[in-house]
Image 1 (tube, rainbow, N blue to C red):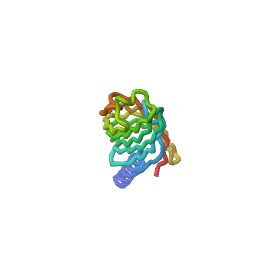
Image 2 (cartoon, rainbow, N blue to C red; image 1 turned 90 degrees about the vertical axis):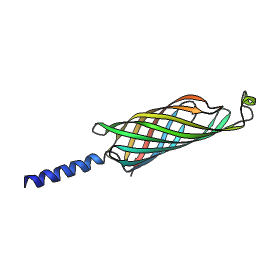
Image 3 (cartoon, rainbow, N blue to C red; image 1 turned 60 degrees about the horizontal axis):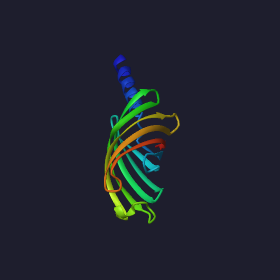
Image 4 (cartoon, rainbow, N blue to C red; image 1 turned 60 degrees about the vertical axis):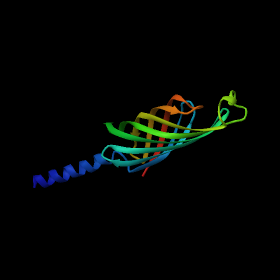
Amino acid sequence: MKRIFLFFGLLVSGLICAQEISNNAIGIRAGDGDGFGTEISYQRYLGGNNRLEIDLGIESGNNFDGFKASGIYHWVWNIDGGFNWYAGPGAGIAFIDLDDDFPGRDRFDDSETSLFVGGQVGIEYNFDIPLILSLDVRPEFYFGDFRDGNDFDVALGIRYQF
């Protein structure tokens, strides 16, 4: 009888621990590095302590407009209660369209497609309601003419879990 209670106790505690990462979460990631401000953010649980984050951002900056898509793989670790921290590598693509009045425009094409690689490190809090708040940093390294070099993006995220 003790073994049955032990088995069910371990099963229930395993299910509770597995639910620290929601199956799906969607929301916004608002911040700014050297470019893209707000992004639509989707997270998908992959198994264990792993998930995938996909972000899509549109920006109308000074003298340019842009679109960015990124994917980041996360390893998630519980700190205490609803607090988790996460880290992982990622990559993406950015499209930039320069305005006619861009200073030094003669050195660049009217538009550009840049690839980038980077990573992400952050902390999040899972509330008892289906809400996650996060704060993260995402260093990125771009490969392009106009957008070439490093970018350091800091953002606050708010997502609905389902």
